[in-house]
Length: 197
Image (cartoon, rainbow, N blue to C red):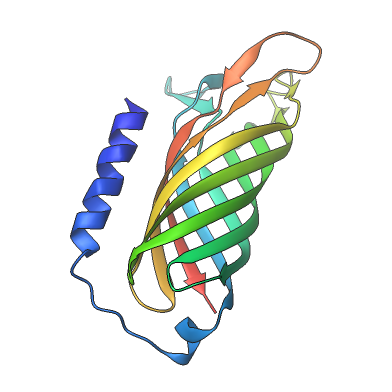
């Protein structure tokens, strides 16, 4: 289901921006540019469930839920570019008496093709280090360490201006709990916002 939604979203993104006109500036003319960004992600297996005193529950999923990142993109030609980014990706549920957090540190090496001056499609590798599930307070018994892993990224980006971009992406990745043969699906869809400078 996530694959179909992501594919439909990428097509919609291309169609939406296919008529966008190029707006050149000194910033977009530079081959090397840096960026900072963040976004929301959805999906993956359920790792833990937090139960609140009012009876409500919240899940910590292996594909969620907030990612911060930064990096650089280099334009090889007018249509081909490469991106290197590093970030912090986490899903946290907290209350006054405890919390549960799944965290990891992704490094992404991506390539992109400019379909139009405003739309880029691409993908690549995502290397995830130090994935772990931790907890505190009344939930302190919940803990798992996972091995570092590699995932695949497919994404599309619409450049709103020479400074701002919005990305729709799908990531396929899987984690293995250290000391066991148990695997956890961390695949997810995401919506990202980048600021270029």
